[in-house]
Length: 203
Ligand code: ADP
Ligand code: MG
Image (cartoon, rainbow, N blue to C red):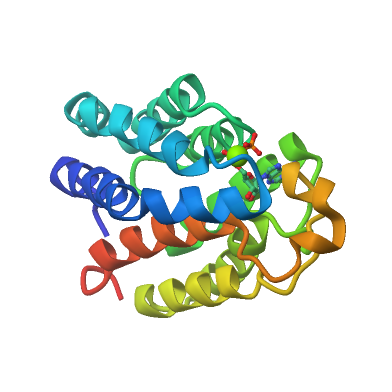
């Protein structure tokens, strides 16, 4: 599939739109087990990306992804800003201009590993990695876009009973159990938005 300039712009708009529609929910999730800034951080970051959408979309995919990641690092703040930024910057480094499905899956896995290295974290600790890991697996297994969106949503739900072992929520110990991880939820929203755009274009 050709991810051309129009599609790159559409993907940026879709990510920003889902954050716009859900940032209050992310605030509430982060109020329950963090400091309540994840919604405003995501909104600040993706508003800045949207404001720069033309410039980001007109660049080839790798440079556009790196630029998007840099924008998030500069604007989002919190623990999640550098983690999201790392994800997109590393994805940009890993992909060429026209990645096929196999290359995309490999790039996603590499970007996820960079997030883990940056956060000194791994799946199972109630973070956004608990969404990225099953999505990475589904990508490698050639799951459809609709299937990947479902995997991401279910993975975010599956963080509810987990004990937080990283980030601010870890300070709560057992009181972190029973709440969805805000970063897992935001990752599932972003992945869902991308999948909704790609659905029907590539399967
Ligand atoms: P902060 O905790 O600094 O307020 P945010 O509220 O923006 O940052 O983001 C919180 C989210 O970031 C968490 O829900 C979790 O998913 C993710 N997170 C925090 N610390 C880590 C870490 N060390 N590794 C991976 N993810 C993390
Ligand atoms: Mg927070």
